[in-house]
Image (cartoon, rainbow, N blue to C red; front, top):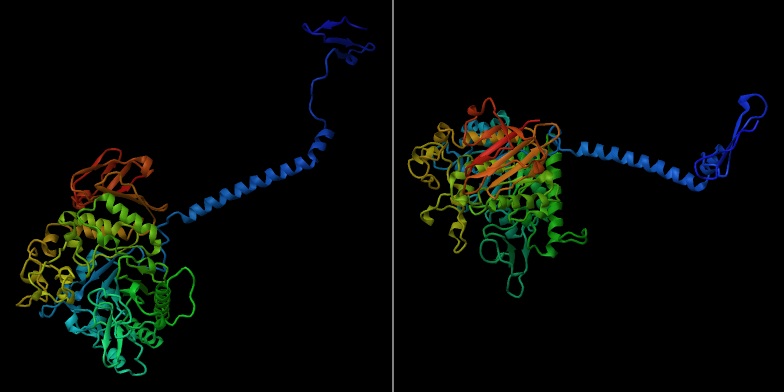
Amino acid sequence: MNKDDKKNGDNDTKIKFIQDGKNLDDAKVKIEGREDAFTGLTKEELMEYANDPFWVRLRWFLFILFWLVWIAMLVVAIVLIIRAPSCSTKKAENEAKDSAIYQIYPRSFKDSNGDGVGDLLGIVSKLDYIAKLNPKFVLINSPLQTNPLLQDEGLVNFTKINTEYGTNSDFKALIDKIHEKGMKVIMELDIHHSSNLHPWFQKSLAGTTRHREFYVWENGNGGNPPSNERSFWVGSTWTFSPERNQYYLSHFASKLPNLNLNSEALKTEIKDIIEFWLKYDVDGFLFPNADIWFKYIPTTTLNISSMPKNITLEEYKTNDLISFIKDVIENANKNRRIMLVEPYLEDSTMLYGSKADIVVNKALTQINGNCDAQCVANYVQNVRKQVPEKKGTWMLGNKDVSRITSRMGSQTYVNALNALLLLLPGTSLPYYGDEIGLTDNPLSSLQQSYDPLCKIPFKGECRDMFRSPMQWKPQNNAGFSNVSSQSWTPVNQNFESNNVETLEQTNKYIPVFSQLMALKKTDPFSGGHFKIISQNPNIFAFVRKCHDSPNYITLINLGKETSTFVNNRNVTQLSDKAEIVLDSLKTKASLTPPKVENLLQPMTLVPGQVIVLKLKE
């Protein structure tokens, strides 16, 4: 039976209900006047598309892309975890990295026998004090026998302790006592030159076969020196010898002839010397003047036939010698020993590619009272850009540089500068007396001088001022010596107020120095990430962090006025809650228990003040 046609709205579409027979289940709907709507692809059509080469390639491309992206993300995550600064994995192959090395100039540290000259047993008598300062290493500067007229310049014997300091047995006793205190010993060994009184030079002068080439000898140039280079001290680098009718090279003075480190026979002697001192159980060596070992040496003397590209002849020979020495040190003793090299010139770039464990950097020896926080930040950033992380070092002064307190012009910054030295990433080399703000001691006349540089006209240097005796007590000779007359060089006139005993009694400088040294041995100061966050020209602020330890912010006011620090979380990306673990204006006891500070509130620091904050999670 046919039903009446019905219209769907105003269009021409017609719907018919058709029933064939009596069974209503057989009813059908017929739509007329419009095309059938899309009802999807059939299985056959889908398979046709699925097997189409274009869609097959697209599917495989997206599939592979997905897994590549997933694997890449996994690899990045693993690399980030591995490379994230970890304080628990300090590199065992370089024990000095991130440690403190306390420099001692024996002549000026402590006199044990009343002759007015510091000595090795004097150092032994002060080991409890040194251990309280908490360094990992003790560096003994210039301990070997030199020409008495040239104050620790020019060795006359590479295997004998300077008789003014004691004996080889005294040196062994010192090493053993330092080891008992849990510290290690580094000795300075200068192989750049010797004294002209050394038997090697005398034999080379005489032209004996074995020693003939132990020094750099060259023929003259028409009655003139082989070249026109000037020495670092005064005059020409070349000195004429009538005995050999030749010139010998001397970078500093005619009485300090350069050793010819290209000589295989001499290198054998150097190997024997290193092995000799390793038997005394020294833990490492500092080799000064390494950047000028081969400076101004004629190519004919170096006898080089070929060398790598993109490297100077000097650098090639220097790195080769460092590798030789490093191998000697490692092969001669089963225990780990370290090798430090120090440049004579300020730029130590040439040494960073060598096998030396530590390259001494002198950048911070240039800062003075005109250098604010931004200036210091620039020095630090420049060093970190140039220096491989594992060889980074910081030094404010040594026996050849004016003391940092004198350069700053005030003892206001003693704590600030020690915090800078000890909490930056890398190896720190505090110089004896830095912990009490020892200053240069101007000499009233050249008659009081011992350093040969003092007597060179127009040189403008006299290193005795930087090497004045350590000031122990407010008594005669500052407790350095009980000599009835003056010690080898005068004690600074400020010794009555600026001495260890007085400062310990007043909790000034030394307690802060010891706390800083202790922090340096802990995470994350013993390794990990470093970031400068300074936002104030007076306050040098930086973060130390690693993923497996608490994070720290250090604030140091290096300016001349009181300044305020505000934690900008957009910069630090760290917590706004912290505990003060060190405040140079407060005693350690007054900070116990630690008080939680809100870093979103301004923190005010007076000039020279240091605050170290441990961030809360």
